[in-house]
Image (tube, rainbow, N blue to C red; front, side, top):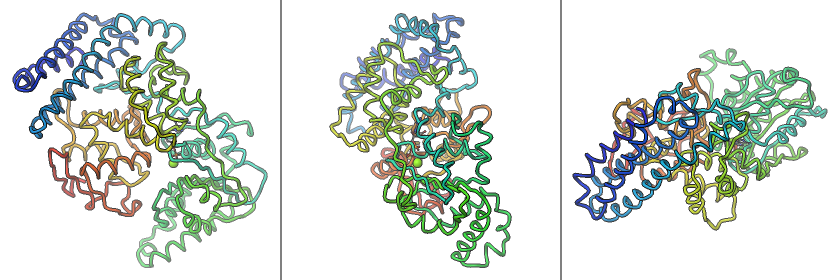
Length: 568
Ligand SMILES: Nc1ncnc2c1ncn2[C@@H]1O[C@H](COP(=O)(O)OP(=O)(O)O)[C@@H](O)[C@H]1O
Ligand SMILES: [Mg+2]
C-alpha cells in the first residue's frame, strides 16, 4: 500500500470506527475528530506529491516517518477497539489514555508536515555534502514490505579492532602449550561478537550472523591466518548444556559425524558410554592437529571438567577461546592465562554504534550521519547505555522506529530518568523500555520467543507460521497474514530485539536468534502477563523448537486462545 493509500485507509477506519462509537465516551470523540483532520491534512499533502518527488532519497526517508505515524495511529485504533471490546469497565481510564495518545500523535503528524518543508532540504544538504545516495530507501524497491527495513547495519561491528587484535595475538603467540583465552564481561558486553569476529577470520568455515575481522597486523594476509589452525569448531554452550549434544556439535563441525552414525553404535549402549567414546574420538583426532575450539557462553566450571579430556595438550599451539560472564569460571579454565575483560565502548564508539542502528540508511562506509539538531540529544541517549553494546543496539533500534525529531528524542530521554548507576540494571531498563514500546500485537510475538531455548537458531518461516497458527497476527487489508507476520519479524529485528543469523539471497530473513538477556525478558514478561507457561526443560533437549507440549499459551489477557500442541 502506498503512503497516501495507507493514510486514506486509516482516515476511513477512524471514520467507521470512532464516529459511531466514540461520542458515547467522555471527550474522546472531539480528539478523534481532530486526529482525523490532521491525517486528512497529511493525506492532501501526500496526494500533491508527484512521482519524481517520491523517488528522491530524502523524500523516501520522510515517507518512512509517514508510514510509521500512520501505523501508530492504526495501532492505537486497534488497541483501543480491542480494549473497548474486552474491558468495558475501564472505559474512563482508557478514554483518558487514548486522549493523551491522540494528542501525541497529532503533534507528530504536524511535525511531519512541517518537516517536509523545513527538514527535508537539510537532508538534501547533508546528502550532497558526502553521504552516499545509496540509502536503504533507495533499495526499498527490493522489498514490497509494509515498513522500510534497512539492512546495512546488520553486521557492522564498532570499536572492537584493538580487542580483536589482542585476541588474535594471543592465538598466534609462540607459547606452544594448549592455552585457553577466556573473554569475560557482563551479558551484552559483546563477548560473542568479539569471539565470532576473530573466529570468522581464522576459520575456513565462518559462523553465520557475524562479521569478519580483516585488519590483522601479525600476518600478511587473511588466507595465511586461515591456514594457521588445522581445524576449528564453534560450540555454543549456554546455561544448561547437555554435554553429549555439545560433543556431537563439535564432532559434526570437525567433519567426524560419519564415523559415529551407525545405528548399532547410537542405540545399543548407555549414554555415559557414548559420552566417553565421543571424548576419546575427539581426543585422538585433535592430538595430531593444531586446533581452535570456541566454547561460547560458559556458566559453570563443570562444563570445562567435561570438555578438558577431549582437548589434548600436544604442545603445538592449539587454543581454546572461552566466553563467560564469570571471572572465576574464566580463570578456572586456565589459571596461567589472564582472562581478557571486555571494556565498555568509549563515548565516540557508543555514539557510532547507536547511530548505525538509528540511521542505517545514512551509513555510507560505516560512517553514520546524524542530522544537525539531533546530535546533542542523541549523544545523551547513547550515554545512557554506559558503553554496553546490547543496550546501544536495542536503544538505537527503538529510536530508529521513532520520528527523528528533537521533541521525540527529548521525550524519550525524559523516560530514561532512572536513578540506578548499576550498568547491568540500566541495560535491563533499556531492554524493557524497548519491549514496552512495541505495538500491542507485536508484544505477544516477542513474548512468544521466550519459549525457545537459550541461544537457539530459530527458523523464520516456522516462527511466522506459529504466530499465525496461534492467532497473534491480525488480518490487515491488502496483505496476507504471512506478509504481516514477516513485517513483524522485520520490525523486531530493526528494533534489535531479535538478531538476524541468516538472510536469503533476496534479503528475506531465514534464521534469527534472541540474545539471552532478551530471551529472559520475554520469558519473565510472558510469565507475568500469563501469556505462556514455560516448563523447565533441558534447553538443549528441546532442539531449537519452542518447548513442545510443555509450552502452553494463555493467549492475550483479554482474548484467551488455546495453543494446541500440534501448532507449537
Ligand atoms: N562492537 C559491536 N558493534 C556492533 N554491535 C555489537 C558490538 N558488540 C556487541 N554488539 C551487538 O550487541 C549484542 C550483544 O552482543 P553479544 O556479543 O551477544 O554480547 P555477549 O556475548 O557479551 O552477551 C548483539 O546484538 C551484538 O550484535
Ligand atoms: Mg554471548
